[in-house]
Image (cartoon, rainbow, N blue to C red):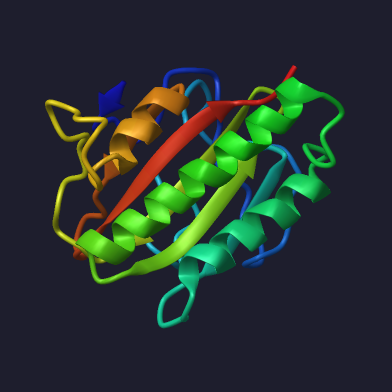
Length: 186
């Protein structure tokens, strides 16, 4: 389902602050709101989404960002125990995450000035993918979707594979963060 909500429904709390690219563990800070995730904020901000595992990588100015993002995601999936896959369902879930990362980063390359950052957050139920860019466009699946034509399938794929997805615009700065959430394997 496409949405412009900054977070999906559920019981997710704010993200603990931590170093870029590192896994973060812990509970929400004291006094933080509970019951819903706070939206992503520009680099340097401290609010985000809850979950015991968070990793981020800067992509701005890098070459080969799609393979870089996939490799970074694959390393996170290994660290979080999604890979190596214990069975077909877990393997399919990991492949879906890698595909969604590829599609979101590719869209930022094609329709914005390239991605600035990739954030991955995982708890026991959901993995959240966020790709930030400085573009002004609004991603949406092409309608009608024409499976036999080349191109234009990225957001359709994201919509079909994800529990939910949306766009967050940061106040006071150009750009956006496109986020998507997939269910963790059972």
